[in-house]
Image (cartoon, rainbow, N blue to C red; front, top):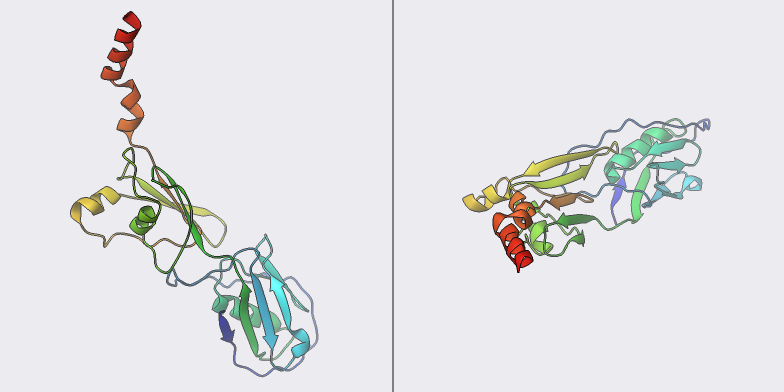
Length: 216
């Protein structure tokens, strides 16, 4: 369970309910820092105003609804980041609130490895995992894999998807994994089929064999 306490003293101010479009931007953190996803559940504990204690769920749209102050965007944020967002939201209702935010329930982080690997599928992300680690967990490359064009798709906090291509063959040939990137939760890794394997069934030898069998 992740817990963060925001130091302050709570005092009630005039209540105001409004939709708050939070502008907190996720900071660059290690890939092991968990970021909130839809359906995650947070417990909020107010030390000096326990009547505001509540449990909130991250809705599919990415927002949580807070008693008395409205909505704050939470998806893609870490627990420290969402705590700051909640603190700022309640600054319209409380003066220097002391809030403890706990991650009560969350989806286990995972990655998806697809394409030309031994065992395509979804795998739990444990600790710090690199691209080559993920491929190895999924059974390694098949004989038809294009090692030089491995794609990693990553969902950004604003909901868009970014992609990067990596030449794993060059890493292997050089024996240098310094360029082996870390993978993050919900990343999708795709290993395409090599051109030669795509053209294999149309090779002259295959065509000649088919022709000779047809002539018999």
